[in-house]
Image (cartoon, rainbow, N blue to C red; front, side, top):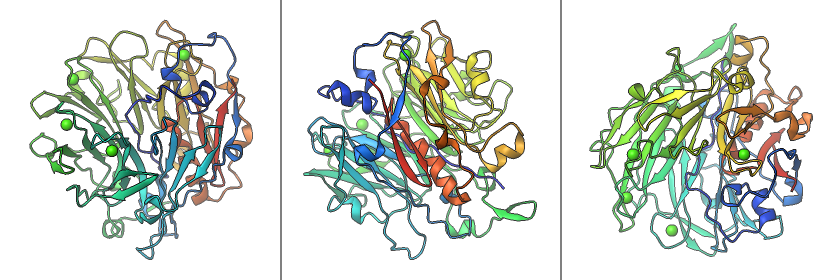
Length: 481
Ligand SMILES: [Ca+2]
Ligand SMILES: [Ca+2]
Ligand SMILES: [Ca+2]
Ligand SMILES: [Ca+2]
């Protein structure tokens, strides 16, 4: 029996809310855009401010005992500016009961009150009537009207919601020509053809449907459980070109992507070869990862094998569950961090020369720190504001990880790895001061536990802050100034 969860779908637009107050920026993890104000050696402490902030989101996975695979994949959270006031707001997307098909999904949209608290503005926003079983979301202003729009990944492909102002969103999926049908976990907006219009890449996960689910059955010691990725077939991503008139064209085939075989858990946009054309790294679950080089002529070519990012240094296809890309060493080149399964370690692919990467994790503190971790989300952030990007990895075990290694734990703390500025990282997790009670899950029933652990992964976009759930309660950590 194998329990799996996914990193929540991510937003790839970097925060640009320049007018945000410093205290709130700290709370919402927008440290990337703020000048260093803290000595590198200052201790870091996070405090649970969930209730104080007014966040009461509860995730539902719809589990009814049949062990449908998507039940193991969490909802996502994205930061967006709903109302154009330059203060970051929050959108949580949710699962829902499988039956009836029309069952309501309790997504949640929170408006920033400018005082450290949020108000639930879901009612009437358009997300209150979005019935889709969602897994994540990505934010982009696809129509260049200055308002953040949202693509939500769902078990049946996804939905495009256009921001019409005043906190309202309209489902324009069909009208826009978006017709995805796959089990989508991660997606990204990027302007791959550099025409000034955001295009949409949907990294589909596996071939899944209720009918397919009925054909697989996974057990361990005779006990029915969830299947893992190996039980389902890989699939190709979908690329939509923005035509500029509110509609999109499916260009997957012409871009050379239709024949690809991915199990996309995470997607990162980066220009790894510095030619000005945005490329894509797609973390795939137990199939080789892909590095899609944008040739500047509308095609993507997988360079993952020659670039050294397809598999681990010993040739294994790792879990690749969470991915991010950033220039952590000020070399001018983006590097890639990848979250993996127990005994697989984090991958930190250092971009050597714009063509070849070298995984520098195995011979570093990163390897020792992450060896027993099952990492669902990982990303770069400057936690200590010293100007060098650090790494946060969000972890949680599974039945399989416990079975693989007796030292592994079901409940795992996150890892915070501080960039020492010389290319090396140190594990400073113990300095976080996070209450250990959040890692105890013995009293949580299995399905609920799955929910709780995966929601922790949803913290991806809230740089420098973190979420975790306990019995499905969302916990919002705020770093003490
Ligand atoms: Ca817009
Ligand atoms: Ca474009
Ligand atoms: Ca490029
Ligand atoms: Ca730092």
